[in-house]
Length: 444
Figure 1 (cartoon, one colour):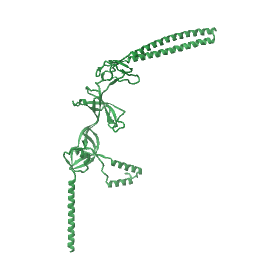
Figure 2: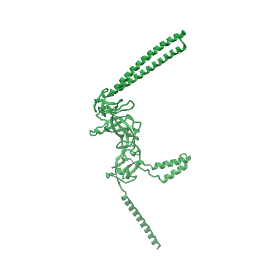
Figure 3: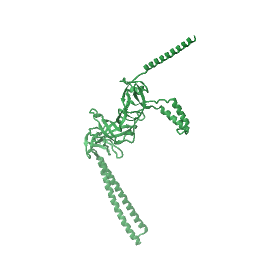
Figure 4: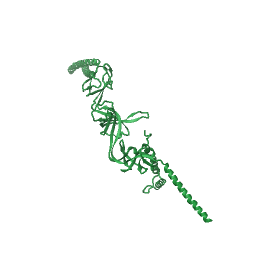
């Protein structure tokens, strides 16, 4: 009886184990079916030459551009040039009505002549006073005049000499006034300061213009040398540190896009001060103006829109992956064993056994905790039917590929698409298959 009970128990145990095993296998199979297989594309890691570009937009402007402003006010009585007309240095641009300045010049000339006549009179009076003084000194030596009479003669001479000196200065003032009147009269005629083309004409004959010597007056016209042009683009504060004078650039002018023409340029100037746009708004941005000299000769017009691609850095024969292959993930949590080991190390001290200060231990722990919260850059390798997450260190990049400095080897197969899979779905160990994924609506 006892033996039959023992056999029954054994059978029950065996059946129970078999049922548990079958249940585990069924659950495993069910789980396998439930796990989503992600469709991806892959690409071999290769060596390439990379050129890093900084892209910026701006306008085409002449290198030499002169704004014509008058230095005297008045009515324009002659304006022989038109917008778009070519001019040579010294050509007449405009003439302002000179009547007022001609009258001032005549008045200044008359004042000068009067001052010169006064100077001659003062000179004669001084000569007469000097003769009288010498005569008085001779009489005084002969005791024929008193001390007071000699003193009167000396005083008369000093007064005559001072009057002569004053009249001399008055002549100088009148001469300077005449020179200024002559200069103002000359400024009523404005000639071209350089060879070029009238690119902008804002005034017409008969209009009154305002001009002063202390500040810019009415803007009448602009003359530019259209044979020598440059692109003036604005670059953000993050990229401007990569720009250097002498770097090459590729320029695409919107007006020549239909002809599929591109131009080359050289960076010639980088602004030292920033220009802030949209101050006080969400669109506030800090930009620096960079000037790029256009190498080709073409019929550009000032103000044409241009897109510049400036070559900042260059690498040859470096490991590269498609730029979309690099994404970010949060670092994996450390195992309890590592945490315990780190805690033991903090208590025991450094590698040499010396105890670490309490503050240093806290700072180190806080720094590690902060670093653990920061996402890291990774790529996903294709290993059979699974994806493997690999942390990487990137270098420069161009429009399509990015340099990998650490973490990968040539010939490995890296996941290059699709966008949703790389940026959201893939994790270390996820099942993958090659194919064309559905349209990534998020990317759009």
